[in-house]
Image 1 (cartoon, rainbow, N blue to C red):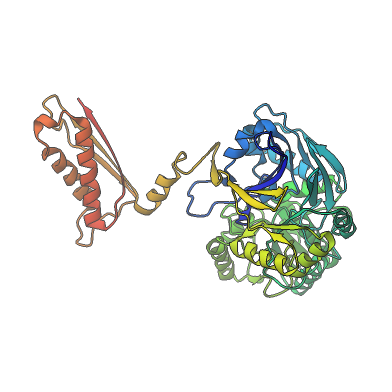
Image 2 (cartoon, helix red, strand yellow):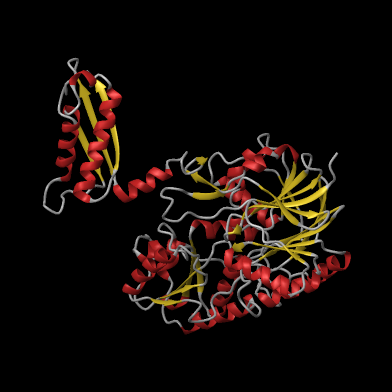
Length: 558
């Protein structure tokens, strides 16, 4: 029988920022037990028209699901837990696989499930930061860290072959706005007992120094609100409860009431309030009371920092809200970072606001945002506390991972493994190495369906967005002649070419000519007629327009 091995494989989040999902396996090959850490999503760009969410491809996890002993979620950001409702039925068809999470994460998961028809029932085992619990062959200890959401944890995963520290998202903040500081003492004790491998957040590995404290951001927000003469609207990530609290505290200190706008922010605040994270704040303003409050006495906390067209900020920029509006002289603060790929949408929203006479303030103008991830000095501190033999950079794009790998090597970590999604890394026994390439990639949630781009029709949708669609109906009579004039409908195709000729007419003529060019005896082959019309219509469009639309041809006999 083969020997026991300790292995790690990322299926998401390594080579990109979002969609975090990792698996840890222990035992002999073919008989390993597994635990899953996180199950996140990322969001589609314009190259995926109609897609709602991007999920990790879990073919390997599904193949191994009989040997999966549990799922642990490090915190309730979408890129760490947002795919759980969609993928859980595939991981555990019987609905019996245990999921472990903190109370805040469990609360947000329940609220999310209530808002999604058909969501699976997931019984969550709740743990507190600092707790140790057993999952199969693994002893898991959660370690409190600071991040931009309540109750984030790192995980120390202990096995007979060594302890792996999975940091999750973290920073070392001496003055967080809520929750405990990062538990340096716990990390140092882990280092004293021996850490085999550090699987560590790379998001800010290219930035020197230490991330500013959330309290400093709160002070920066207070100064902006204090200086503003009109209304102040602050947009941030809805899950950033610490930031929401910082904004509310700054508003209170400036004598202003706070209005929440956006379903996701309200959902998060409801859960945070139930768990005591909003204690000490005045009640929030109701939307119907907004018009009764003087402009200089209100702060709006709202969704839309990434330019989402249906989010509250975009609606305000289009003056589409019934009870709430912004006017010239008001201020909009972006207390967030712009996620790559969202630049165009964000700028479009900002341009509309500027045209309304509204002042825009971003983090380059004032200290109104800070990352929840560690910069290089904080990473160096983590290495010093834990003293790992192996370093594996995760959670970042290629540039972040490469910079983090160099830093690990410079700081004396013996073995640094440049893993990417799908790399199965043997951590022990022996020298660590990548030993297998696991099936991996992306799948998409499109309405109620999950599948790849081909299965969901995304490839054709993308082509439709570039070149439109032409549908042609041909009816042949018993003499193998056209029984009637063809029907042709073009969608997304220009009306005329550069000579002024009607392009639909050109395609129609091409369809008729294609049929008539086929000898009558061969027209009984309806597939041949279909292929000829298809080629002729596409060619006519290309000659007139320079592009080839999608063409659907239906040939039938009367």
